[in-house]
Image (cartoon, rainbow, N blue to C red; front, top):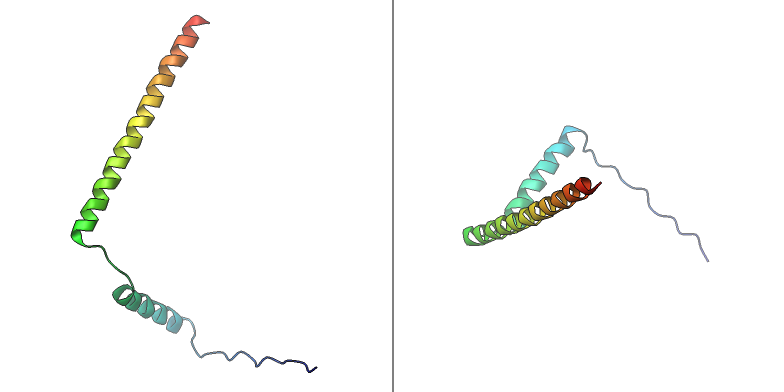
Amino acid sequence: MGVRVTPPVQKTDRTGMKKIALYIQDTYSEFLTKVTWPTWNELQASAIVVAVASLFIALIIYLMDTSLSFLLKTIYEIF
């Protein structure tokens, strides 16, 4: 049995601003090639779903608030 020795990690000459510039270039390239953007119809459909869901949740919260307010007023009037 021998001892395995891993080769040393070679450092690149990228420093500071070069790293930032490379990151921005890679990000821009990825946005253009790897991201699938929705079509206008898909975007509209998703926006409608979000709007309807938001209104539904707001209605539920309003009903809960109103009913609990009525319940607490009733309890306070008793005592």
